[in-house]
Length: 179
Image (cartoon, rainbow, N blue to C red):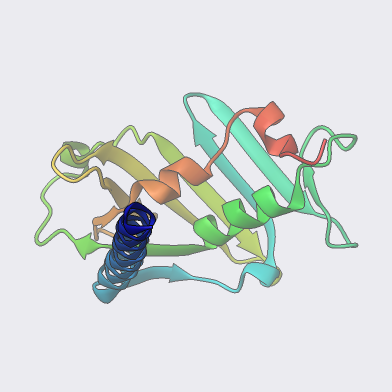
């Protein structure tokens, strides 16, 4: 009987440690998310529902999507291919709402940031016909952010890798998990 009580006590202590560890891990993740949103600079903010066309270029591959009159996104040049709506919604959201971590103070030459030959060129057009374009250049080795610049502006920003990862250039990945 004593042995069973001892085993039960050990199991209870282990369970309590797991619960405490879980609570701590949640707390740390929540704090990281809060810290990530503290210093956000809104560079481009557009209502995603108003975006009617989006395109981006990476490594010579152009991906372009147009929303039809029924609100369905289609891959330009291939009307028979309908990409996963959630994937395109994510792409549109990242493209039309560019947030930066920081603005580079007194940038000299955009080529120093890889913006003369950008890794990505992202453009979208809203329902009123207004087109916005921005460029994503080199990755900053220290923290993994990328340099970005809006067409027509001389301001250079750092953005997270999430923006870069959103721009899928593989047609098969656009199918998502539904097929």
